[in-house]
Length: 491
Ligand code: GAP
Image (cartoon, rainbow, N blue to C red):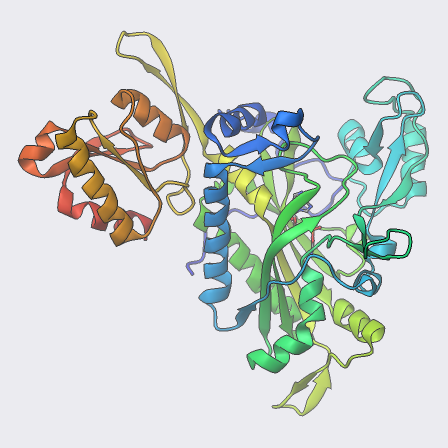
């Protein structure tokens, strides 16, 4: 994989102001509101349970959203699992033995600090409230420390304006459920809050069957669930979301080098999916901000438009041998690795690159959204909305459009469509309804990089018009060369 040019703006202190104020950002056509509207209009993401009035903070991926999301997941799997000799995969269950979450520390530590308003009963995350209203990063501070900061600032409730916020207290974010038909006597367990733990729990089986030697990694893509106090910002913070996670096992002394190598691979991934480098940066966690399992963490942050600003997109953590040691202790199973060259037995250390699928989809849409001012055929001002998605992730890679719905044109167009399906294996759209200008606009809005138009000239010269989404430039291409052209653009 080529090394990338992604700028890494490392922010050392979480208390420091952002290195570039939001006002310094170049004007972006994208806003969260516009992208949410486009997603509903074009079938990327719908509000969950829509016909029942919706269920707050739940979203469903529609026909194009699921294609975009699958493209992300397939590209990730191909890049980090199938193309590497040192990686294998796992697909574990969402429900696990409740002791897993005691061993992992989630029962005790997986908390967010919340405050309530005594007047209007609204609930907020104390750390987010301080971050937003006072501009201070307070990750890792205790509820008592947060309470002191809130008391000193005497902040009003953001909902009703009364100064009646309670002290901060811890709230466990795991969703509980009961196994067995009778709730009272059933076993309480949790919907997994991260996919990572199953990899540690299956470490012994994977070691025994995959014949991997250190360093090696295990990857998993799957759902995770968190009872977030303040979900929101569309699909940024969800109650139910998908993660793509890697646990990379190394000799303890190799941890630091593996961390740097994974950071480089994560940056290369950002370039691969086409996120703009000026919208991505790396932020180092301060010691007090580190999770209970981590000796070093960096976040890859994305610059969201509007007041959201820089927020976490992905994470990279050095989990040391914390998880394997805990699972060894709680399960009683020997999880050590026998190193043949040295004859030593030890618990490997773990480097964890973690990627949120939904945040990837959201940032791709925000990054790709653009508007161009044009004039229509009557000379009236018009706006062309387009998604400049990288062809690797775009739901449709191309569209085949007969100029008119006439049998002599549709026959050639359908033949081309079938050939593209057979010879490229990628998703291509076929559309013969409405005027050609409207059809181009529709494809622009869903991010289709190329349109192939079959017109009356095609019947003479056996060529089609290729239209480029980003430039709207058009050129003629021989029918027989279309599959190779498309494969070439996707390579
Ligand atoms: N195993 C480590 C772990 O779970 P995390 O930073 O809590 O670390 C990893 O989560 C990634 O999962 C985040 O970087 C983000 O992309 C995604 N993520 C976390 N919480 C989320 C939520 N409530 N909604 C959507 N994505 C979320």
